[in-house]
Length: 330
Length: 284
Image (cartoon, helix red, strand yellow):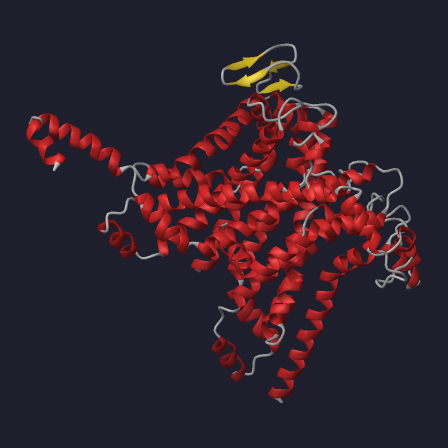
């Protein structure tokens, strides 16, 4: 009724404008639900991303002042560097660039072996799990455990297994395979450390891949197999001509996830070897961390390198999406 | 013939599964057994069965090494982070799925777009930001420091959580919304009384994914928390390394305390965990 009174009072023109303004606000009131997320995103997401982009063009050791809102960069602690940060670790400065490319090479080796290893273990495991009607739930829980407990607690166990007087060496000793033992420990020896980390990574990545493959297998029509068996196809042919192609989308997802986590992840390396021995397990993420929080800080360098890492992550994701599209459309 | 073949492959399946289950489980079994051994026995014996049970190790770790305190810290941080994530992003998911406003789709894409930025990229800026806000450093209180620790964790959970909540709310029928509107409920009433209670499965999914992630996190908390009294379990565990002689049985007792809550949560909510993983991966 109050509204009716209002209408009679206000002139048509005012009424119309008021109504539209009110209406606009009302129509967009749904934005309020998104507002908290937007505020958090602006402050802790967008702001830090822009900060990092700007910082990558400066040389700054963390002392003195650098800020972007309002902008400040006080010499000598902070200096404009242009693209020099990028140039330095990519090619200009021999020690730095060697260090960077070596780390990237380790990332690449890890990406290839972790991805292959994960698929080679997870696919048979998922097929077996799919066949096991009885006890499937229990097996699935046990197989998934390494994924939920990723973190320092479980890295400790692996560190012990790999110690000079640890489990792996003593088991090899018991088996009479003393030749294979790593006398300085599996993580302490330059020729074994990277390989040893890859094993732990595969151990940690198999659960997720198995679950994804299992979900994929459960969508495959059983009649396909029955029909192929009628035609006398061997088990091997069934796997190669039915299972593998139909699971291809899942495989692509696993490949993306695996490469992505190898490129972005460095916590395990940080906790188990800190890049050692003598940088033989150094990875790009850890190197960025060291520039940002290590003994000799070069924060601009850390930012620059992290944007190169971003570019890699992005390109890998795009490439995989493209393969995914071309394969699923064909 | 076919029957025999089927039988053989089932047997092979169980052999493969059991072999891998042992491999998967072994580190945990070793953790439990070592937490019950003397340090000397941990180093000298490969057997999983302790010669003599030392329950005192785990009791001492909990009491004298104050693990109960770090346990409490971990619980506080994880619960607050998960609570914040569920509240903020269920609202956002509802906003994106069930309300209209200018720029809605663009904003949604912007949220998903930041997914590709590696976590390590924003570490330095975050620390500078927290410093400017007085949430890090010697003068910062515990409340301020924990806020500074948690907010970026909430932000990091944004893309996947919004995605999951939005997708779920989109599948709920529009009639729910219309019926409530006819009753005179506002959007807020509809969200709190109808949609949020219906979202329990997604809340469980988002909750468990982020609980596990936050509970296990090492690097970010190690940067923000500089007062040892405020440490989480993983930080305290790493702190044990500073001892001159590494006590493996103590380490394993601490590891066990760290791992058990996660395993329990996982056992209770594993259905939702699997759902979150598959949904998250397919999005990628």
